[in-house]
Figure 1 (cartoon, one colour):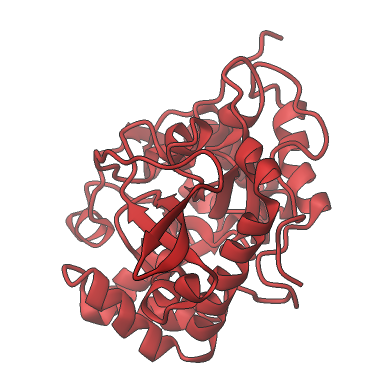
Figure 2 (cartoon, one colour):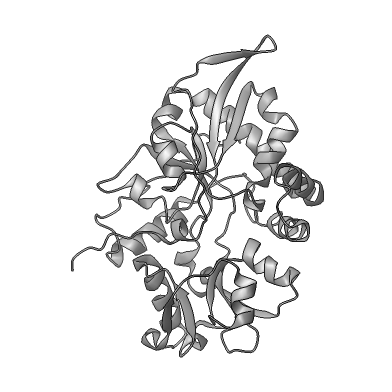
Length: 337
């Protein structure tokens, strides 16, 4: 079977903003207030949200500064965080295991590795209005699903629908134009939407909208892949391992604070992104405070078996241009103990 290049789902689930930035390639130092700081540029995957709270907490509380770092947080270009990190215009950024795949394997490979999991388990799934029969995947038969028409997306849906005894060919696929899940469901322009529950799902709760939801990982553990993750420039990290470790150690402190005091962390995020809805941020922060580390003892840890299981599933379904080798695209080597 001819292999199909998998333009990945997460890249189409974010709203990217243009931004320019610069960064140093090595541990060159800049002097500020007679204290040497190493410049780090960190590129987001989207506009600021609760996936990023620990980053802003670490910045606000001086954890980066205490580690001898000057961290600049920038918005992503149209082609995503991978473009900046892969060319070392940013040393670190936010991505997803699925959307980073073309950057770590195949003809467009770049020096990128995932270095930490921001959320331990995949919180994405399908949301629908309560009572429409879509509390399980089989219920999507005969319903309108907003699709990006992506190979990985459709293969995922097909597998979970069929695992539930359904017929995926009976799901009505319509082009996705969803920018506001609450409005889309209320207007009934679409019946089912793929979301990350920690933001869009919580938004429906805040709006008082009653919904049904199922998570992909609960249907098949192969879909418990890592999303989102922190990526780093592999070449830069090899040249500057102490700086890479110092950055992640400081970042860990920020996320630990967001776990232990989500209300205070939410206020720091709102201070840095006042355009966000306060009620949504507070509710989302409470939800994600339990998901950042979940069932692991080491912040950011990525289980090789889970990482490889998802890429092996892509291999088995021939959804990428080449076969992905084991242990491609991630490392736990820079994580603090």
